[in-house]
View 1 (cartoon, rainbow, N blue to C red):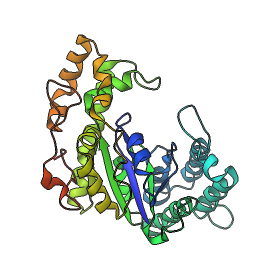
View 2: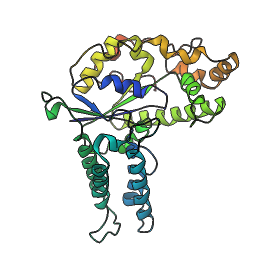
View 3: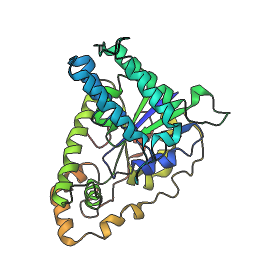
Length: 318
């Protein structure tokens, strides 16, 4: 089984992408759920720090407590997400979490320091167990199945995820950063100020650029896709993804994804907001291949970018 970690800045099109990708029979995903264990605060990264890098018998139990609280949050449905417990059951999830983190303790329940290999094997096993709850058509052999996990900031933890002993694929989905900032402005959980929204996006891009550089230096492939590019070059992206994921399926999954609806956010912006967006994020957008004058319009990727498995690795970020 392949394990595909999809990430990108919030409001970039990751959900749209995974919803359509999941239409291929070999691909399974807990739709409308984000497994924040892999990238968010109090998840695996914090456990790694507390149990491997800087073990303390006083701090480690608190890290376990926070991980349990995070798992409860992931299990619970909200207005935006389907709780993982609706997919696999609350008891199954609780048992999995307790079985996994229980191995970070002695038989007497005392937190213990573990080595990196043991740590990553432990959470790879948790990931494999979660993937095992998904249903695939009988004709899809276990070795041909693909598990997709989408949480926006996944790829900011590429250095962590790449150490899981799994057959992993990393896909980053991006959108015109100016439209991401404009969309964030409408979100109740966003900063509520357009300049601050731009700063959020800018800081994400700085962090993600460093991850692309790290991945390149360490022989890790991050496939760099742009939602507007997928919408305008459907056939090329279909063939590229089939090759990268090793799957077959309907070639019309992106047919309802079109460039113009993706630009609707730009049409409602005031002239003042456009000035702010272009001033704050215009150079970054142009560096990623977007038009300076028309927000949400990106130049086509050259044909040779799709010709090899790693053709779009890091595209636009280096």
